[in-house]
Length: 286
Image 1 (cartoon, rainbow, N blue to C red):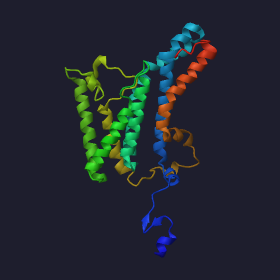
Image 2: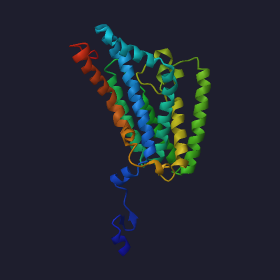
Image 3: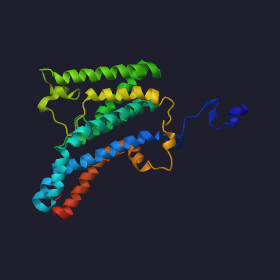
Image 4: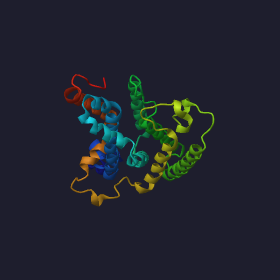
């Protein structure tokens, strides 16, 4: 009893849950850092999209001197660099989500929260011409909940969960490649959230990440995470010095909040710049 009383972190011999400060301290820095790079590149990509597809044309008409911004954004949108790195960056982002599923103590709560935000985004964007019906958050929420179901079916056994995720991820990826090369004849846009080969030309979503093959990357990330981060610690602690990574890791730590706010803030900023300096009296977006 004396040992229990002396240890304030225990009650009747059981350890209390980690406090928020302890949990934050134990964050794996390299995951936040890599996720932060993905988030910053996403912001840049959407910034270019907004200029190319929303503001650039009006700016060019208002004053030809601004055509350089418009041309640069258009060239970036159609560049080989973007075509190559865009899927790589998002695939990496989904793999990180899978790794985080291994580290999360409540994937059900996490998945439901992301799903709620995804539906809220759909409701808001449906009021405009840029409706998001199944974007990255919808896909992530679905994937997190799938992982939660797998973990419960596997009785929280990490090795079995890893094996199931690995097999399921490989099968999903192979099936997607086969059907993408030979899409079914009967297209149904209602099933476009499953895979793009179901949607056809009639399906439209401003942000579109179908379940297949993206679920495969999340599941493969979950399988990898079991072995790489089984002890919930950084595999590169020697590099975690002097806080050099914090300016980028911050964005990875706040990825969900950044995703929700970045587009409205970018559009607001560009609208104000347009209203004040480029197209006086005209917000363009409104």
